[in-house]
Length: 211
Image 1 (cartoon, rainbow, N blue to C red):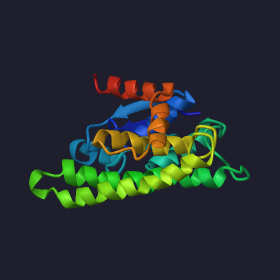
Image 2: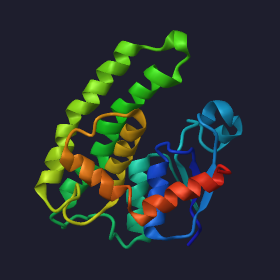
Image 3: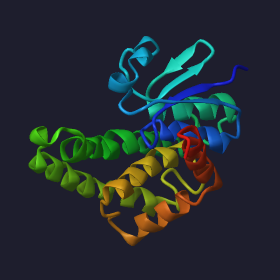
Image 4: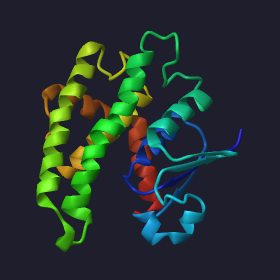
C-alpha cells in the first residue's frame, strides 16, 4: 500500500483525518498549510482547485470531504473496526452520526467563525454569528439523543469514525466557547479529548507548525 498524504491546516476540518490516521496507527505524511490555503498557499490550488483542506492523497485516490475520508480510512486500512458496515445493526446510526457531525454541527459553527472572527471588521455580521450560534446550540439535542441510545458513543458502545466526526465539532465548539449543552455531552467530549490518538494528533500538528 502507498503511504497516505494529508494536506492539513491546524485545527481545521482536516484534524478529523489526522485524528483518524492516529487512531489507525498507520504511517502517513503530513503536509501542513497556512490558513486559509486558497489565499496563503496559492500553489496548493494545483493539488486541490477548491483550495480547502483536508486533501487526502493515497495513490490514485484523492478525497476532500473529512467525514468521507474517515470512513475510507477505516474501511481501507482499519479492517472496518472503526466503521460499521451493511448488515451491522449499528450501520444506520453510524452513517447518521458520521454526517451529523459535519452537516449539522460543524456547518453552523463555520458561519459563527466567519462572521464573528474571520471577516474583516467592516464585513462582520454579529447578528448572523449569534443566529448560527443559537442554531448550533439547538441542534445539540440531536447529539444528546444519540448518546442516550447506547453505551457512551454516537453509534453504539464502541468508538468509531462517527465519534471523530462529532468530536471535531465539539473541539471547535470549545475553541468558540460554545456551551456543550449538557453534562452528558461534556462527559462524552471529556472522554474523546483524552484518547491517546487525539493527543498524538494534537502533538503532530504542533510539531509540523514548529511549536
